Length: 106
Image 1: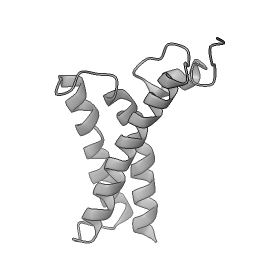
Image 2 (image 1 turned 45 degrees about the horizontal axis):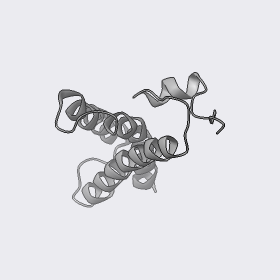
Image 3 (image 1 turned 90 degrees about the vertical axis):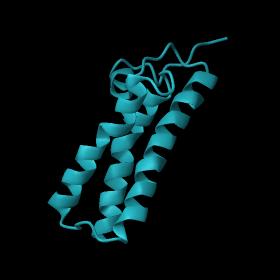
């Protein structure tokens, strides 16, 4: 049960990074940062939760990591295709400024 909770937290934590990654040039510094900045958080969460580094945790947490990245990227594409107002690369900033919930009229 603890492993699933940690996986869900990792999934949620990676959504903004996937959102950011989808808006930058592939293999650029920002792209690499969007992928690698969450890794220390994942390691710290492993220690804090006490699940450790058993082999069974790797497939679950790696899947959660990449699903979070993928979901953030898809969220960005959905918002662009639904003609949302101009978006930035920062999901929290777009939410606070109300850009995500505002749709342009045709």
